[in-house]
Length: 172
Image (tube, rainbow, N blue to C red; front, side, top):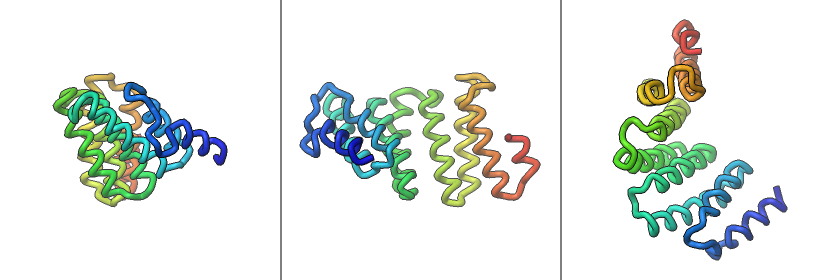
């Protein structure tokens, strides 16, 4: 990862903010850093991207929410589960007014939050957020979509963790 990390650092301005205000390179580089487990750099780049997007579109734009959603994933990968939930909530606070309650990005954020609640051992809250995701996904995408299947799978994991094996099997 050494040479890639150096390349990402330089391409992102090396901490100097060296990208154009109309570029989404920070978002792309942050996503790459997330995939390479360069989490601190990923968060820096996502923060820069939020600042750029807020300057360009304001605080209530869906692109800001998407960036927060991705930041929350990084916090989750770092084990900062409280910060992840807080950041997912920020995303929802923007997505819902910007896109509506029934947009798939809202469902995806609920699904992501469910995973965090599961990791926190809050199984009832995890199931609740997975149900919210399904109520959006199924009408929007159809019952055989991969996002629906993934959500059912996530619910199965929760039921298995609760020792409710028959219910888990139904979800799988």
